Length: 317
Image (cartoon, rainbow, N blue to C red; front, side, top):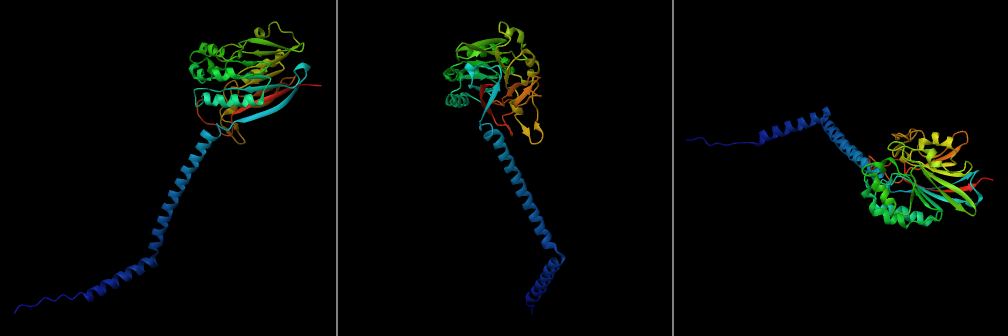
């Protein structure tokens, strides 16, 4: 007779289940499960931290590259100047600088500035250099906009260091179509009600040669003189030539500023006077340094909003 085969598993299954149950109890007692949960929690935390860092960087990048460069500040203030003739009392000078057209700025940005200027109705408009970042062609589409601006006492401009890049003659040629008076070591006399003042413009200190003696030739010593000079640190020299006020740009206010530290990398020619109002020399000549409108090198601004200014000049009593 052959033997029948009978496989009986329940007893073995019972033992296996018992063993599994014991292993589970051992694992729980030894703390293995919480460690795995800890690892999962740590992994989850790192993922969330990474996501938060990326999000913060994106927000900061958006602020520096989008919000702040487009958030124009209009600075308005009054200066009392002893030699300003009474006929020019309360003269409103609109000052802007450093458009840097061609580097994340174009005719749309210029149109925005023009709208601000037109709304403020200044008596005089002054631009203190760097209309383009590199090439004159970047300015071409803004020429009609510049030409549309009106100021009863005139529109005046000087060249900045960036205007000399590429073909500076191109920038000069385009300015002739804007109605602005380009001053290159020159002056322009403005007459009103029998009294006169002079607007003086000097050449760039790096890519040309400022010549205040040539610029002042023919002007009486006691005449009120408003100086346009791209680099603000030149004020230490200008103050000895009897200028009553200097308007400058060039620095962009540093473009990137850190709390309690200030401008990170102010450019040569603008490391002493970086932005805002200063009093220079024994006679306390007012120097105003605009933060400018555009940017260069990096398309960002940090704690340094773009700026235009309306300065009211008042005769000191």
